[in-house]
Image (tube, rainbow, N blue to C red; front, side, top):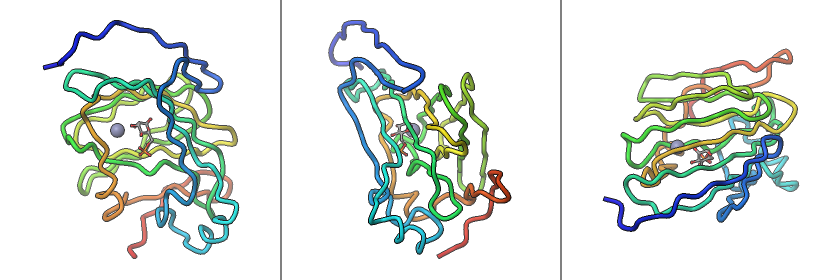
Length: 189
Ligand code: M6P
Ligand code: ZN
């Protein structure tokens, strides 16, 4: 049960930039924070000196208790490491039976998901609502030329499990081939 009675609140969201006002938390992820996640290690090493900003997450923090919901925005920059589009780390929820909802605000993205052997991908654009059911790992990929920005809502006690992604990853990657985003099987090792 929720421990304390929270006061209702509203946030101002700027669709074009993903800025949330007020925001109390901000996560910034650069290439060095995602070591080994891109398929082309040489291309990753070549980009490490510049260490580009890949994405930011802005949120208004709420207690991580059952019943609470986190609302956050992600601003995923355009770009590639080798031929692989910039993407988020991706995660399972620690609490595996917690789902999540995404709403596309700007740009073009793919939402790739994995549940055991099952793989799924959804195209996202402004106005797309994507549902991540319980038990599915989820990662977003910017396949456009401008920042891909989306809003996410998920249970505040869901937790992020990145370790399982480090170990098993997603079975497909999103790469640029002939100017278009293409899914290719992940090569082991
Ligand atoms: C969305 C939500 C967040 C997540 C963020 C970045 O905004 O799913 O919970 O933190 O994307 O994704 P990741 O945590 O996998 O880097
Ligand atoms: Zn999640």
